[in-house]
Length: 351
Image 1 (tube, rainbow, N blue to C red):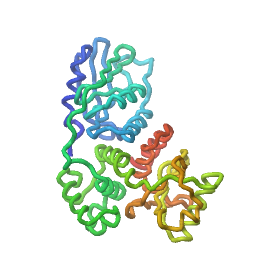
Image 2: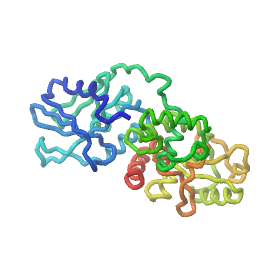
Image 3: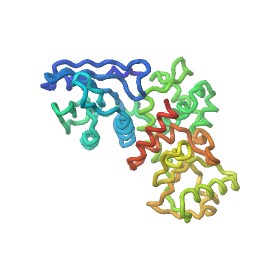
Image 4: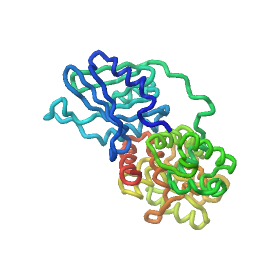
């Protein structure tokens, strides 16, 4: 697997070419640095030296991944006016494969600097420098053989939730991740080639894999799992969730909350406007028991469970999905507060 320093020649070269940059150094991440930081860029200009905390994004950016970046940026300390320019607290710089114009505008509005392979740049250094280039064309996409599939994300979630499962048999992994034994065998060979698995059975989470999970969930896996949206007759979410727990228990069915309701159960920090649930709904009596009505704008989002990995732990009598799935669901939301909840969840459960 590539290290954060590899593949950065192009974006760093674009930054070095800026007329006010006299010198640039990339310092790899230090041991014990905050999760999500891959290093620091030091820029020397005629007005002084600036340090920017770096996030390397070699996956193609999408809504979920951008939300993850923005949520981490919220946790950075602000610049102190009492400090000299050479002592400024690091701001955030994203070094990416490609930043489309629309995503670039999101970064600009969020105060996040970036540079990518084609030459799209936004770099703001205090009040002295502000340089933006948008609209450079996307480089060629990855070959079909290298593209991530929903099955890839399912098995990665299994390893992320339980790293020791990398030693399991193909049969057990297939049952846990909800994919075929043949696909598990193929993906294990692929993960060994990509060094996601070391020594054929050792898995360790990295920022690159985290990005792949978040991006792949929002772009590939979640659309495949989405069964529909519904509305319920209860006057409050708590009343509905109480009925959900009771009805599934009576019908001997399993469910798992994810997104906002799971975050609320785990941390009492955020609930959100939606109620995403992993639940086998079609062809069962649970829809009738819960008096659910299909509604394109309904608050209940029903997702098809994939394997046993979606059922993690009970909090106050409510089964929730594992933190990695909850985190990815929060970052797929359009609610800005969901980003804050995702950052808090990551800080407590995913460090």
